[in-house]
Amino acid sequence: MTEINPLWILAIIAAVGMNFGAGAWYNNVNSDIRLLKDFMKSTNTKIDDYMKSINAKIDDIISRIPSDTVSSTSRKNLTEKGETISVELDARVWAETQSSILAEKFAGLNAYEIQEMAYSYVMELRFEVDFNGRMQNSAFEHGVSLHDVKNVLAIELRDCLLRMHGNE
Image (tube, rainbow, N blue to C red; front, side, top):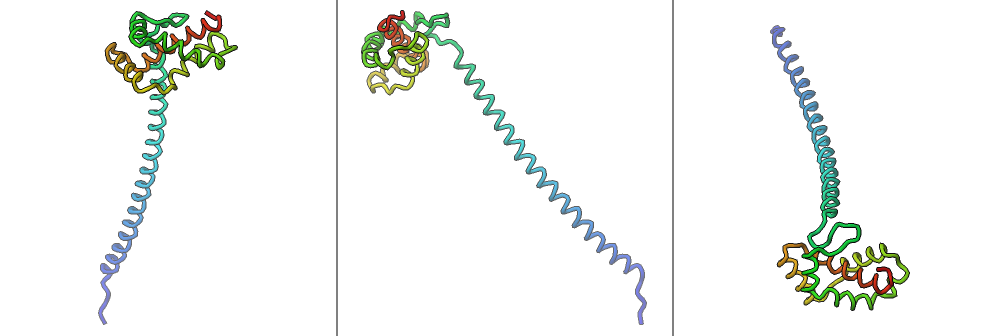
């Protein structure tokens, strides 16, 4: 009978131990990778939320910047550029036509409410294709946004409604 060499037994035990050790190490690495992936997903979600919040705040700040067409004084008035755009678009005539349609809807409102309603009305209104094209052309020619051109119309509509309701 041959005798078993104790070194072979140690080698087998060492190999089995290395396998268990490698398996444990492999599981730890996989666990760490999963934890890292979860952390990265969580971080990306937080960054996306922060970016949305920052963008909303930037949009709010930009919306508060006075336009080239309306003064930022205590009663909003048209600037020289706004007056020019108003004349080009016949905005006062347009406002008179609209105010006769809206007279009842604006009855009983105070001056501030009339102003806010006029702005909302103009910003949400779907303009006729021809008039919308004239508005876009005016915005382009004067280097302002379409929103600024609509501000001109809103001021003209507000002034017409205020005159109509005796709030001027």
